[in-house]
Image (cartoon, rainbow, N blue to C red; front, side):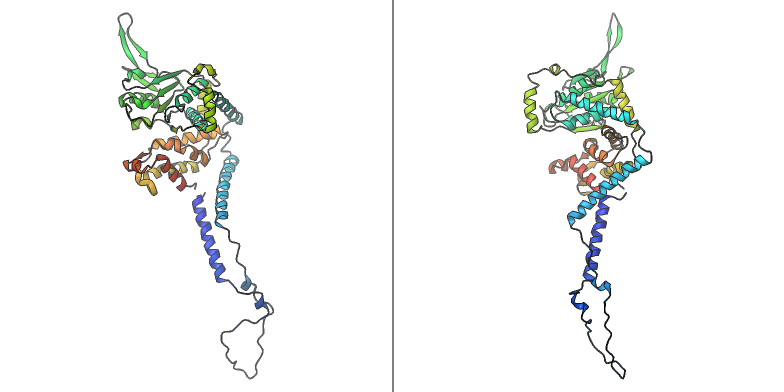
Length: 425
């Protein structure tokens, strides 16, 4: 399918042709000319003996009085382009359904998942006010069997959101408060020796379904890197032995972006292993009123009585269904175009990119768009699924230059520019 940009160029070109055609065929006072003979610039005497009256046709050719075609205004042209884009969306949807490419998942299963996710959202909302996009991002990361990094200023309930999801998911939960003096063994565990028992392994807090890594940027890189093997391989090595982590295994980390004392930047190798980076902002005015009523500073977390509405077995089943969601080659090409544009640097603000996104970004868009489609009750991916999760997947994988920070160019601005310049073909 041609991109919306190309369709707009075709419409503009058509408009120019119509204006040109109208100017060439413009005829003044056409009604008067019906009863008068056409004017002749010069008259030459015919070389005949007798003069004959010129024959005036009763009706002049209709082409002379051709009226210009209706020309649409720019706003109407824009509406047409949007309409054509929507038509392409519906054509893709109909094509997937008619060709049997959807329907790989039982509709009853899709409906069941949608209901469970809504119940999960409602349970979390008992303690967390607003922040629906953050909650959806955390659930989406869980469905993708991956990890999520949440960034935001202090006091906006980053840790609370993660704790609420963990409590409502019915999984084992461990929390690590990262500090400057933390060691890798404080996370993964250690081999100890006692005279009575001999050598034994004491497992660290990483051995849980949900690991809350609070203020992860407070620990030095050596400690942060202790998570890399667990996040990618779902196993850790203690001494000479490797141990598998529980399944599912989900790391939800928080990061404080405004402090510069006692904090360290996350290693690129580690931050790339977070599928999403979610930016948590301030609540709306009405939401903040409700926050004052719930007030976590005077109530304990347990008082809200969050109940597990799903369990590890159901989570594993959802993760398996996400893989079965159909993704067409057209969408794959769309994803590749977006990611490769971060490397080709052929757009306005591309000069601020030091390094483009790795293939892990393509994989992230691939699986995250499937999860988003399933959450919306579909077993096939549409372009809007890719656009919706693009910022969460790409913003922490774009490495910008020092000039970007000086000019206040954010990764989100770069991603938006790329999405605006790339169409579905």
